[in-house]
Length: 441
Ligand SMILES: Nc1nc2c(ncn2[C@@H]2O[C@H](COP(=O)(O)OP(=O)(O)OP(=O)(O)O)[C@@H](O)[C@H]2O)c(=O)[nH]1
Ligand SMILES: [Mg+2]
Image (tube, rainbow, N blue to C red):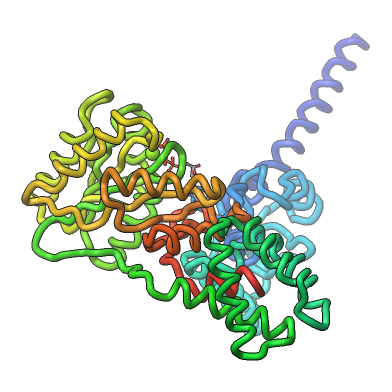
């Protein structure tokens, strides 16, 4: 009998415990850290959601999943356990909304299932300002990168020499030695360095320059003048699909440059067809296809191992049929020393030239980190396909930007575009003045 009474008592105790637990969890969404009520609050307070930092690091913040910027158990700085614990401690069992956490902005009216005081005018103004700032940051991302910001490596190489030259009170033989070493190390090349310094010596004599500061100012002026005459515009002739052919050795950035340039050209109102003329590897066409998707351009590709000329031919036909303005033609990277590959390139150019196509640019893509070898490459490619301009990539990671001077002085080929980084907006027209200033200031 005693046992029966004990059993019934235990049953009653268990039932009452269960009832209280269910009652505590029953309010639903506001208590559940996966529910959107709290996330709506965090995501729209202008601090967690779109502050221009979280959105870029790929770890959270953009609120694309609709859970709010601070949402998701793994959102940085947002501990879901804290939410639940905090809610359980501070909310009545009716469970409407969560207590604000330290640092939370008060919720906005009509957002989520959140109760609390109405935001005052100052808070609304603060939120609006934060959102406006986020928009500014997003817009700023598309702004053209500045040479000065991206040429830190090249500048720091020259900085030591500049400081040393300026530290002396006169211009002496050490000054000239240092300038020579600086230019050669920056890959201006022995020949062009000699030309630059000979010119500078004559000017120093003619103008009676004695101050190191004036000497450096003269050098900068000379370098700018040396680069002033290049025709840097990309040639476009209306009335037929213009073909711009991209050539160069392996890995210099041909395919990436086409993607970036397509975006620039489309922004200028031109329609673009991309030709996957690198048929050596299937992955090459895939890579170009990704860029085509990204910038919304049409892609024409052939079969792996097929004839690159026929891909370019098809692309020109497609462009003509669609009345597209430009065919940006990729080619396989090739060593300039391989005779048969250079011959293949000649054929590609001949075929691209067939009406209705018109080759208006042959752009040699050079990697700025390879230095003086770029000069040899430029010579060989020019012999094969009449290069009309150079795209100098990876200037952002190179201390050797001086190759620009060697190419223009020794080969007379204008540098038309430079790559200052890997993202789609990191291709810019070459600006000699900005370039020289970025190197020396
Ligand atoms: N930092 C930096 N990297 C760049 C730049 N341009 C291209 N790259 C990188 O260079 C690498 C090679 O670029 P690709 O476009 O594949 O070069 P490619 O000339 O088409 O190479 P192949 O097709 O193999 O001959 C990629 O990782 C690019 O992101 C630039 O201006 N700066
Ligand atoms: Mg490529």
